[in-house]
Length: 238
Image 1 (cartoon, rainbow, N blue to C red):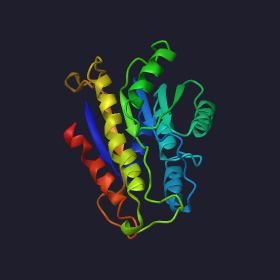
Image 2 (image 1 turned 60 degrees about the horizontal axis):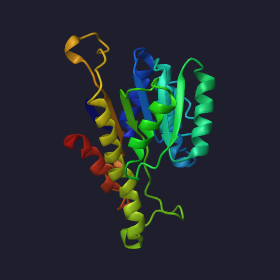
Image 3 (image 1 turned 90 degrees about the vertical axis):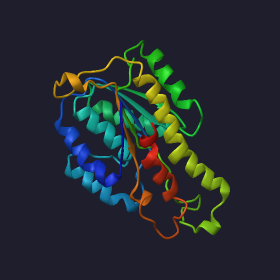
Image 4 (image 1 turned 180 degrees about the horizontal axis):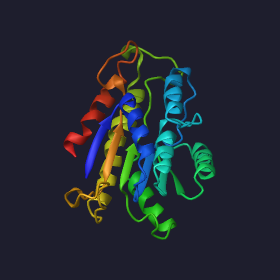
């Protein structure tokens, strides 16, 4: 099982490569699949995605990742988000674009202990075993460093409650999700490698999407980089 951490800028060319590969026979899972991109700050993301013929439909980078999986031929995709309405819209759009694929949604708060394990069990049960494994997991779920008033703040103005919520999603929640994935992947039979190499059999791959702020600070976002720095280190301990 392989685990990678990518910044958004690193992820965009990967999505381009995925769109040209047609060999994803397993089951994919994407968190943050309907979180949305409503801020003008994310305009560069939308424009970059359109250059590789992927429209995020303002549903976010997670939706774009799910789209890339479907374009690459993955026919079983699990969409995870805490936004039930967004998930409904995302699955509707994806089914219209890829009617030959199967999409199943699960409303999950990744900061809740045991939530991902429960979701994976329910998906297997609801699909009568069609989604009986997990081969590719991409963690796009995350919380930005903007408080309830939508204004960046200094550390001295940031409450402990908000700081804990930020870490609970961006770091602890991602770690708990990875733990759930690994418990499934390590028990399943491996799939053949894309290049047919018998020495490269894969039980699964995990990608954690991070932020450039995990390594570079920004004024009035002092509490934001820490959980993303931790997120980039998760794979070293897994």
